[in-house]
Image 1: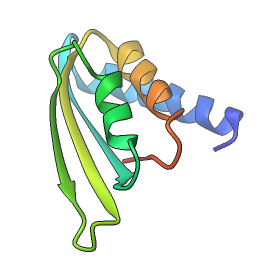
Image 2: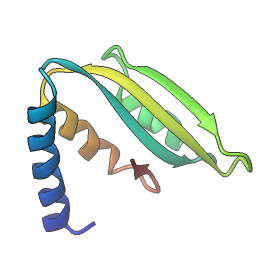
Image 3: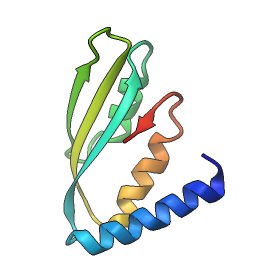
Image 4: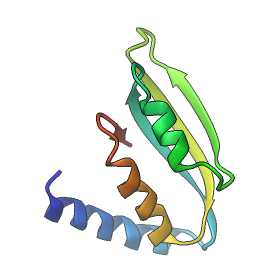
Length: 95
């Protein structure tokens, strides 16, 4: 995603989050991660020490793992900050 497109995406997401939830609120993150390597632990580390509940499910062929994270977030800016942190992990798809 180019920077202007991702900035636009995050602005839109921020407005949707502000309109649809009362903050602080629980938020569900979903990512698809290549199973090989340490990508899953990289994502787990990003959400470490903030009370996140993390569940993983490997694809039928074992190539990818879906990672679902439920965590109480302070506000839409905090939600977006975590998305930006995760976007630095190579090969991760945010859903």
